[in-house]
Length: 387
Image 1: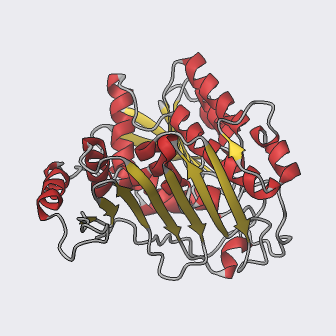
Image 2 (image 1 turned 45 degrees about the vertical axis):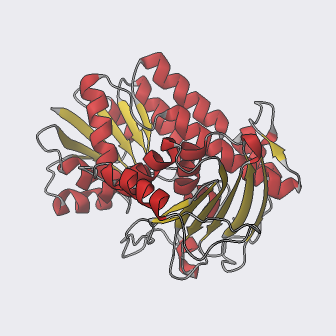
């Protein structure tokens, strides 16, 4: 039996706790920690955990019977909590974004390696059946060369969203929608397309004058062989219609799922009828890939527990978490310098450290309101891949 401790009992922790409870024959949540113990007590009762409650993570980490620590705190705390947990001999599952800086990511990965422990970074959208199906289609080569990827990370958050005390600041949240919302889609982009060579980006804040950080950004990534990727990150899009579209030499595919294979006339214009044979072949590849048994957070927790039990690699480790953060830091650098940024970022780059980022980014507005906790922390999410 794997004993689990959850550090941070805000809204996202419910996804972790519910996921762990799906595998009651393999693990048990034995401890909860939060600087607001009343929140832990509420979840303890809500999920009938009978877990011990802590307000100090160092006291929790003294327990030798804890095997896994699940970290669900604000981004600026991820690195210190992860390193402390790894040094205490625990495996760690940490929420996105992995950390506030690449330097912190490197410290976390070094601690995992030194202590021979597993570090996994939450990227739950990979654990969706249509995502695995789409990846299988792209890997099949049936689309030919991929020319363009369009990633719409569309979310909507009301003005009060940034009133929460740690949100909307470069110091504590580490960034805006690009870091904390589009991180999911940027992870998917680099998983499916590989590493880009450079990025050009613009960020702005058009709807949330109670936040220092951006609420809208547009980035263009250049990949090898002339391929391009376009990522729009937003918390201003009503309806939250999210999508990933890949335009190939022979066909286009997307999530929500759609396939189209155009045929050119003699003059290069498209025929009214598409290539039905190729579309059916691609549909068959998509349909043949089996549906995942467990999805989203539960799917990643299953993968993580299996890694702990069998010593197998996790699908999303700390190195992959770092790669995603590097793309986001490159977006911030480009947007704040007005220049195209080459990848990878060097360790002497100002955007390698939290201090460098904070010293070089624009504050769109100054944070006005500070609410300790919302009375209702229910999470509602966008429409990506629900079709």
